[in-house]
Image (cartoon, rainbow, N blue to C red; front, side, top):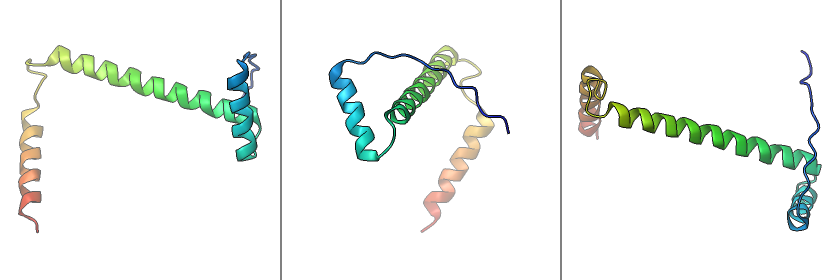
Length: 89
C-alpha cells in the first residue's frame, strides 16, 4: 500500500493555545503534532456533518408540502412497525 502524501503546514499559535496543546500532548504521551492533527481532523469531520445536516434541512424545507414530502408506502410500513412494537410485552 502506498503511504499517504504528507504536507507541512505552519500554524502560529497564541501562547495560551500552545501551552494547552503541549500539556495535552504531555498528558497523553503523544507528540503535539499528533494531537493537533487529530483536532483538525475532528473539526473538519464536524464541519462536513454540519454541512450535510444543513443541506438535508434545506431540502426538507423545499419539499415540505409537496408530493416529495411523504412516501406513503414507507409511512404505512412505519405505522405497522410501531403498532407491532406496542403489542410486544
